[in-house]
Length: 427
Image (tube, rainbow, N blue to C red; front, top):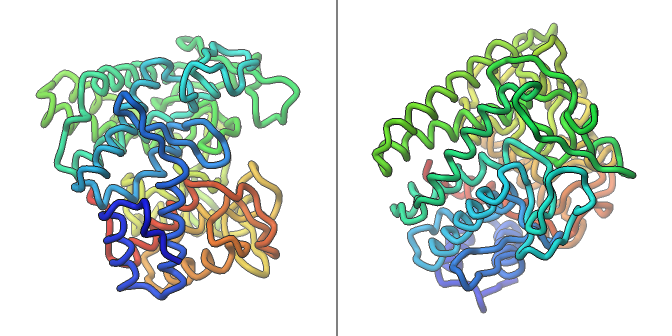
C-alpha cells in the first residue's frame, strides 16, 4: 500500500530505499507507520514551531514527540524535514521554559487535561508528572538534529536558557527531601497515578543521582532514583557540554554540565549496581539511596534494555549483558511469554500484554542479526490485523491490544526497519 500523495519527496525516496532492501510486507508496514505519523500527528504552527500529538491523546508529550520524529533525522538535510524537526525542538523548549516539571502540554492555554491534579498546574499544561526523561529527550533531539542536519539554528537562546533551567532542576532534585518544592497528587485514581507522602514520593537519601517522580510510562516511581533515566541524563549532559563548547563557546556551561554528569554517574555506579545470585552484577531499575532497590524493567524508554540505544554503554558491556539476561527472563515481573510472542510489558497495561516498543528496542540493542530479524517478524505478526503498531498486545492473542493509534510505537518499528536496512541516525 503506497502513501505517495501528500508525503514529501524525501520520505518517498526513503520508503523506496527500504523497498529495495526489505520484503514487501515489511516495506508496506514501514511506509504505513511513517505516513501515519507524518499525516496525523504533526501540526505546523504559524510561529514556525511544530505541535505533535501522541496519536489518540491530543496533547504533546516532550518524550513522545522527540521519539516520534527521531526516524526522520535520517532525512534531516532535506529543508522541509529539517524545518519540521526544528519546529518540534523550538516548541519543546518553549514548553520547558513555561514549566520544566511538566511532561505533557496543550496546543494553547486551553486548560485541557488534568487540571484537577494537586500541583502547580497552568492552562498550558496537560499533565505535570515530573519525569527526568521529559527533559532528556528534547536535548537529545536537539543534539541529533545538529549532527544530522549540519545546522545549529535551533540551538538558540531559548535552548540555552532551557538547558540552564534543566541543569538547575536536576541539581535541586539531587536533594529532593530538602531542596525541592515539587509535589503531585491525583485523587480517585490508580495508585500509580499519584505520589505518596502528600505528593512528595517515597523517602530518599542522597546518592548524587537526580530524583524522578514518575517513570517514562507516566507511572509513579516506587523509589525516587530511576536508574535508566539517570543514565540518559548523563548522556545528554555530555551532549550539552559538546554544544556549549562548539556552538556557544561557553566553557562555564560546559564545566557545569560535566560536573553534574560525573556526580550522577558516580551515584549510578555506587547505588545502581547490585550483584544478582544468578546473573552477577546487574543494573537496578530504581533505588532509594537508603538500601532498597527495585529489580525489573519497563517497556517504556528509557529502560535498562535501551542503554546501548541511548548511548550510555555498549551492547557488549558485561553489566549490561547480565542485566539484559535478567530482564529478558521471568525474573523480571513484566516479562511475559505467550503463544504469539515473548517480551517486556508494563504495569501500565494488563497482565500478559507485551509492548511493541520493547520488542523494537530488543531488536535494536541485539548483537545478533538473526535475533533482529526474528523480532522484526514478531512485530509484523502482532499488529492485530491493523497494519500499525500498538501500545500493548495480548501475548496469546494479538487481536487484543491497547491504543490503536500510538505514534511512538509506529516510529520505533520504523527505526528498527531502518537499522535492519543499514540506514541509521548519525550520533
